[in-house]
Image (cartoon, rainbow, N blue to C red; front, side, top):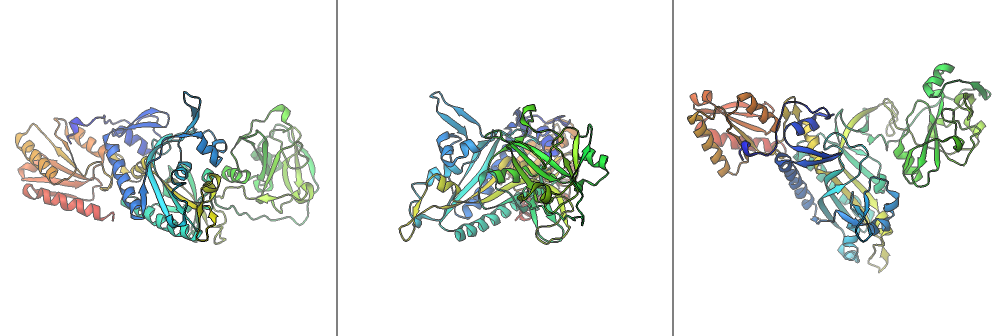
Length: 573
């Protein structure tokens, strides 16, 4: 293809609304165009990249006996009502009605559709195990899209669903898919991706892993142990704290604290460390607006994921009204009035001589001993693990918090969906059983953006040969020079005959413009024909990452280019 025919503009300036490098470079380079919040159109370079990613995914899914299918984007609400998710999932699920007033949803995930597809087929144990997958457009009404293709509302995703008759069989297949994912990420050029234990969220199930590309611009926080192999999303990682109980418990004392509303202000006023404070974090249940008051040690943060999992439903930050009986800024567990759901984080277990709100304006308590003053309460893990915290695996103070982009996930779903949707099979003894499911997802656009984030310089992306929009970028410098143009044209035609993917720039533009566009397109092999090179009867061949730069005689150029492409491909195997 000739670059002069390539639809889409490339430009120098980083758009002001681009927060991360991959977003800015993919807008500047003519890969995509913003349509609406979290929605983009793809130009040819990005579409060529995502098609190659999809092909790699297909090959790896087919290699573990996956069968490609396609589910509808628009699904009847009745399927989601069967699973219970029509009401349990929040506003991320886009609900609407057609002209007949029938309720529908835009698919954001397709567990229900997969069960519907195979419910009649899978009625005998002899049909198992099997896996179906699709590469499909989905829509998730994200509240805060960001980072270009990193977090969007409309996206393309590979989602796979496996069905089994035993947990042992699921675990064996789960391991196969885990290894297939590792091969996928290596083949697309980011073998540094790590797997971490995660929370299953709205998907449900017993075990799940996320595949993370560690990068400072990632939106997920990952707990990594420097002493052992422990790795987990901070939303799922167990928070372990050590409390030192004072030998003597002080009396509960009411303290006048005018105009003090935060834990930081309170601890400064009382001259105590934050770990000797008990703070309240207030939510409301999405389903019934009931208040949820969670007490936690003042130096820790709440994991909303853990709270949602415990409550079995969505929550939101509370809107505290005058008539609800809650005194904002002065909430404490002692003498708390009202019919609210009250939770205690295990960081408070065994503590004494704590400060907390007194449920009276401008007052706090000092000397709180929860067991003495609040009675027998239940403690659960609601806190986020923190940097320098205790590793749940080895028990050392060796946790480091890093940032990461989630590029894939796998879940052991169990029978959550097959039971809810009454999918059954007859086992060898003729007894009815519910199939056990696994599901496996990879976001195609996010994966492309993640590769760009991992492999770029100040001038543009550095695409791996396996997913690059083209394999070779041929630059004809001074196309008004007939000798240069003739040799460049001949090389272009010969490369096409060899089925090598070439983007050819024979525009009559300055060298700076030509090379700037080449950097933004990020093609791994660049070949330059110029008057200077023609004097030496050669082409200059270089890699986009600048590792290799050589001059090759004209009659040896095709062979040298082919060998270099093969070398770059071999590095990704």
